[in-house]
Length: 277
Image (cartoon, rainbow, N blue to C red; front, side):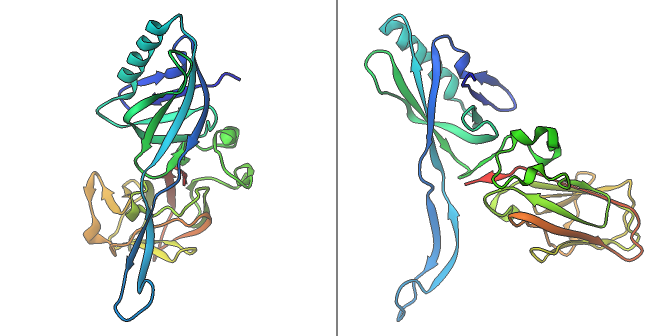
C-alpha cells in the first residue's frame, strides 16, 4: 500500500507525498510532557497537595526519503516543503502509518533536518499543540462499515449496539479514547438534545455522576446544544436556565439517562472525537 502524508485545515489541503520523488518512511512521537499540579506544605515530607496532572504539547516526527536529480533539485524540494508546512494557522497532519488519527499541529522551528548529504533521508518535526491526537472522524460519522477508520483497542467498534444518536430515555455512549472526555480541559464535545419537556429535563451520566438540568419548558422542535460546557438555544447561551452543570464521558461505556416530569419523546446525539495520548 502506498504510504501517504496529508496536511489540511478548513482553508487548504495538501498531500506531501504527491510530490514526485518524495517517499514517506516512518514516524515517531516524542514523550508526553506531564505537568503536575502540586503544592508543597511546610512541616510535611514530599508534596502536601497533589491535584490532577495536565499534559503539554509533544513533537511528531515524520521521516522521508527524496530521490532527486542533484543538489539543486533537493534544495528546491526543501524550499517547496517549507512553503507548504510553515503557515500562519495550525492544521491537521494525517499519515498512513496511523490512518485513523489526526494531529493538530504547527511546524516546529527549523523543522526540516537533513540526515543524509545533499539528497536522501530527512525528517520534519511538528508540534502537536493540543497535547493529544484525535480520531480522524467524529462520532456523527460513525457506522460499522467505517469501523476500520477508527483505531481503537479491544474491538468494541464491531459491537452493533454502539451508536451516538438515541431516541430511548436510557442508552449507552462509548468513548474509545485513552482518556476521559472532559470539556473543562478543552476537549470538544457537542450534545444535541430535542425533547418534549413541559417541565424541563435532566440529562444524567450515571457512570460519572454528572447531571445537566434544563429547568424551563421546551418543545421537541426547539433544539438545545451543550457545546462543551455552554448550553445554547438558537445561538444564544441559556446557562441561567440550567443548573450550570455539564456532562463528562469516562473511558469505555457510559450509561446515560434523560428524565423529566411528563417527559415526552426525545432525541439525544453525542458528537465528539476520540482522543489519544
